[in-house]
Image (tube, rainbow, N blue to C red; front, top):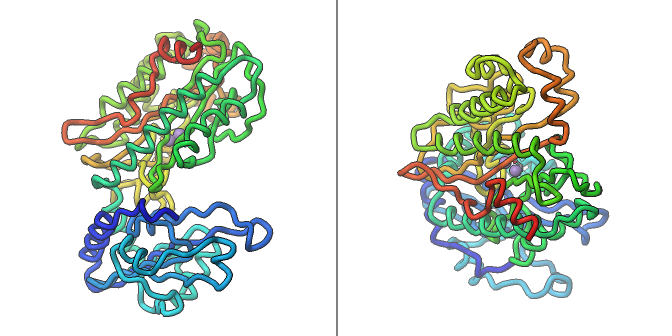
Length: 452
Ligand code: GLY
Ligand code: MN
Ligand code: MN
């Protein structure tokens, strides 16, 4: 671990804020541990829980942060006798205390009775939590819920150190996409482009923030296959994001023509998605409700599809009835922070403001965020158009669409399977800042990057 990456002042300030919000209660935040592949010495890469990382700043495996009023301590497993042989010398206790800005105590001294915590997703860490606290953590106790709300309130609004981390991730993410465009040639495979993209991230000593999607089948939203050959007439959809050295996420999608030139039908759909993205980004500002940002994108997509003859009717009504969702079935974006879908381990408690709940309408039901935006929040804006057979043939959705979907007109766009354009947007006092604006997205600019 690189102790030089520590940000003790930011971590200390965050802990103090959390302690203020918690009053008398005590909170324990668990870092988690990497699961072994087949024996303890061959683990999967370790990624600390983002809640832990936020308040500590460094990823100490199996560690637990305790916060109780002014008493903050990091409980660490002391190095095993043979650690120096296999893992090298451990940093001194003084160096760790200076890096995290609080006392360090042996993990064996941790007493957890009466504390609140946030249930880990992985079963092994959850078992350790339950052993330390002496009670189940799922469902959460009232104290756990209060802790979740306090953590959400802090992590929703990024401080300066967080924004610097998001910028670092954005810079690497932009570089990755430029490398991917430059590496694209008909006849190569998806994994060649993925390798070029991830190399740009790895050479910055970073890793990816999520499993890279680099696919000529962009209609499969979470497509993690990378074996397809890039055909000259294909669009390649790349959803790839870097994770900064401090753990902050980038999350960007671009869609480009393998040949370096969009066909007229690909370009027509691309322009519709680009317009929807521009209108959604323009709607991002303090006080705006995120669902309205989603609806702005939906409206633009419906309008564009009507202009192309693919949908018939009034865009307002098409959106109200969810007809556009046959081609845009997901939400326009989500929170971004230490996690790519920030704090989704806490469910809709983070993404939905109190009193708001998910719609049950197809499409809108996948909207992961419905809060009023405030300066310091970071969100993605990622509209798309997809031709998914299973959705287009779904009898219920076909009934909803009726003759408002012109299938013959849609068939003319068969060389478009999936297009998404995604950027990372910071809400500012003045409106918003696109953190990933350095990456081209106008059709001609994208073509130029591929051909170069
Ligand atoms: N990369 C995952 C997403 O865009 O939501
Ligand atoms: Mn995203
Ligand atoms: Mn993405």
